[in-house]
Image 1 (cartoon, rainbow, N blue to C red):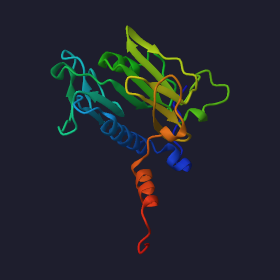
Image 2 (cartoon, rainbow, N blue to C red; image 1 turned 120 degrees about the vertical axis):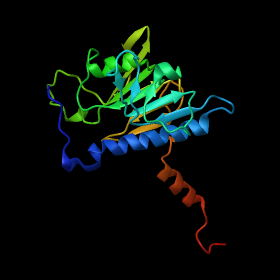
Image 3 (cartoon, helix red, strand yellow; image 1 turned 90 degrees about the horizontal axis):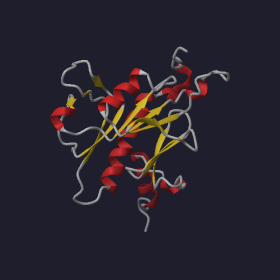
Length: 213
């Protein structure tokens, strides 16, 4: 089945660049706020080519969002060779526009890269034909321990990531939000991690109006 083409009339619904940037900001803010004092740093970024095989120059993958534990944000990176650094991403989040099978090249690269958790986000899943055999859904979660395994989800738009103490939740359109909480139950709406704009609005709402006494 051919991939669905983005539609210009959907506006921000297909603004995947916005989605990726916002998710990266949310994860960075979450780790800065929740990382214990003295714990190894966490780097969150986008569009970084990861090379995972020193014998194959084509063995590389560029995820939309990655989480690297043990590496800070101060270093400027143009590429990353895992065999030189001895560090692999603990989490990859990649945006897709079609169903992805386990034997697909995308997941093959993710598996060979060695990421522990891989989340695929398909914001156009609702546009598939009603009788589509592909079974598309907003979020797919693969975990790698002894091989790459698709994880069971109680809700097609929610993924628990217990290693990081958070959830990813699809809230419609291209909006993918982060919730802080344990994996045993989906957190309340109060646990939705605020964007920078939401934090600013909350701060303004608590501030007195100019000239108020």
